[in-house]
Length: 220
Image (cartoon, rainbow, N blue to C red; front, top):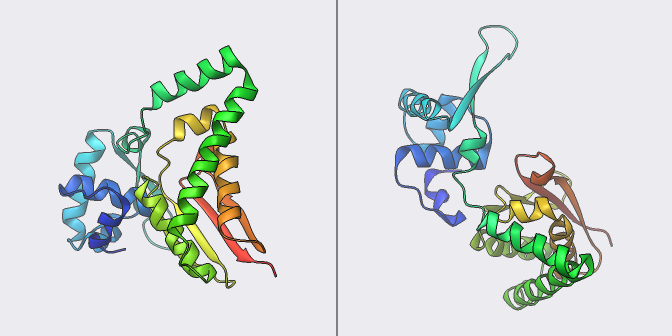
């Protein structure tokens, strides 16, 4: 991913430090040389920025052995670094969800999630009306999800299917409190991508993954 492509994910970082944070968010752990290559700067310039970010507690380093020679130093976001990416009104959202459940019951909370699912699916169906192939639908879905803050991308996998990759979850606190949101979103994907399409979640942020990844393929 080139530095120009950072802007398609709903956040357009300009400061060098923010661009590095975005790159690590999107790509996972990288060496300083790899980080510099992604951003079009030297590895030393990237290393200097990474050291500053480490001093601020936003990134940390780990050593990885690659056989012979000295272990390589990889940099990754810390929990504090992850928190730089917005979780939409996290505390307020969780408080409201807890109040709905405690006052009105789990069934009422399920109704709220179902209403959100129906509304989101209707919006996606309108936006994807002109998409014909599975590839077109998944690419459009990634665009829609990115516009909502999920930093999503669509890729072809090695088995002829597609991958939907979401590098951020803007409702992570809500989804952690109630995983009905995650189940509902997967159901939306299955419905809008059409009959005969299988959606399998391979990675899950709520369960400790760096990102959410869905493998999508046609079954018939």
